[in-house]
Length: 460
Ligand SMILES: *Cc1c(COP(=O)(O)O)cnc(C)c1O
Image (cartoon, rainbow, N blue to C red; front, side, top):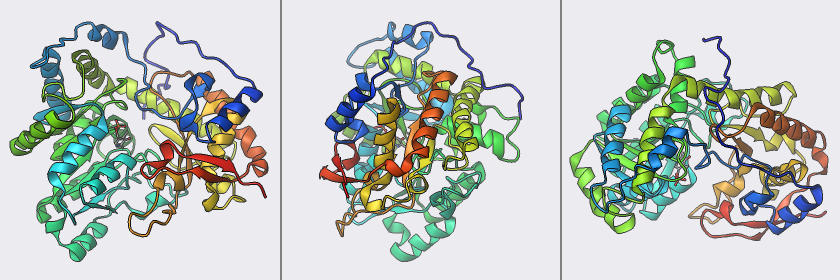
């Protein structure tokens, strides 16, 4: 392992001012937001760790790229640059741009899924699963059991359990499994990687069963970093080489370029099969835009092409994940229960252990996220029972084993001092955890309820 520190391989050229609020202001703001951090105004937030999506800092080269946007309706120069970049770094031959990741998920689900199909995946993702369900499919979790245990130190908690895949074939038949969706650096498991050895096993399983391998490649570069650090035989391979190898083992990819690729908006669906590409071109014109811009402006495709190149740079990714590890290690040293090992894009607080007095029916992670905002102006996100939603058959709340608060670190945005302020705030609220109350729904939306739900404290 390199002894070099994770110090940033860039310097700051422009700054964005942020404002510290008073406790009174924050009390009013969180009440008005119904104790849902998604409903806070950004102006009322001091350090915004809600998400790493679309909030990265673009480089001067990406900003310069915006000026070279070719806004032709058809055949934009930037489309060809993006297409060639996707093939060079990610191996996929064909690509349709979409407005963001879920646009790609929508198109793919509509093409490949028929009523009654099953789609295995290494843990669900909110929008991915919903698009599978809207197309008539049922998601099946085939991640290894360790992924559901916040205490397990398994180095590749994103791995697929091949026995669970075999059991699914036994039960429903391979004919009813159009594809498996494998995410790299699994978001809902805590930003946990999948190993290349496991991806190869999944590839072999797909070949045996004639099932497509779809790659949710939103955080593939961060996954490559963990492979380089932890998997035998990869210490001397570059991030670029590892990313390419991962992609080469898969057939299709959905990408939210708002994460790894450091642009504010955008995504794509990529594949090697010309027939699938033809079908995707047919649907992208209906839902996104012509196949050479999808949901994106020419300038945005240019910034994305440049962002992809920067995202696979070794120094960049070491600093990126290094900052996350810095925050996680500070919390760990203070005895705060977090998901281990520390993930690639975020530190996940274990709300069950921090708030043992709040039952899961009263949304401990949601309550913890609201309390952290109130204490410090830091915005985080619930990833527990509220995000999991209701079972589509029984209508009951799905009670996930993981009840987490995600402190998500935007790429190239905050400094080490911001990480220290964050760690101090988490330590303070954990010391006073007994005062935090559970929550109950005031308004519960029918789909993706975590985005717009409102709550009230449970007074007992
Ligand atoms: C963000 C994300 C998506 C969806 O992408 P959007 O750009 O938000 O539509 C899909 N999968 C994973 C793992 C993600 O993190």
